[in-house]
Image 1 (tube, helix red, strand yellow):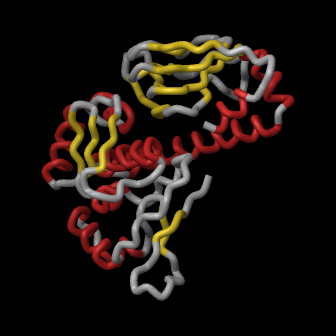
Image 2 (image 1 turned 30 degrees about the vertical axis):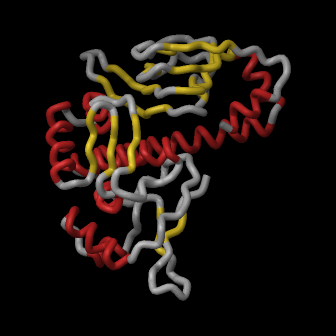
Length: 278
């Protein structure tokens, strides 16, 4: 947690540790919040609720993120931050924290990188909702959460992620009804791609999940280790089996967050390397 490490080394900045239970709002849409919140443990959902009660989840917040930071500190907050699990946060008075940012270029840089990462993720979510099918949307979201939580892609069948997210949360994040989400998750389970039950995501086929999710996920604010060097030909044929796209078409792009090395080493297998760096 780079931001936390930077803050821990500062004298005179008062913080208050708070433990919030699931369903608690750290702040609500429309509030004038006098504090910032640094998430230490747990998951938080950022959401907007319309007058008719419909809800859109904008993002899922994982540990290491500073909440409440906005362009106009005197503006009403445009979203709510609700705890999905038990959450431990450090609360900082806004006025004191702003003074520290002004005097600490490194902290300002870290916060600007967090903001850029969040913006990129918002753009990826917009593409997800606007252009992808229900199956692709859900695969994209689940893969994103796995990458952000584990800081690496799933690499073998049976890789697991414990996440406090319900089917309703998934629907609110990708613009689908709970019934549609349930049907789509059933389809993905029957196709042996993923299984989501009792807050446990099990990746049954990592290659298929990456292929279904698409190629534009580069919004995750993480460093990921390269995948083990798979045979790109079998990789493409397996993705074709699950997506209906030809291997040639798939090879013209790349797996999520990765690009194909145009100058492979002596090995007959092509290397997959990181296409996005924080």
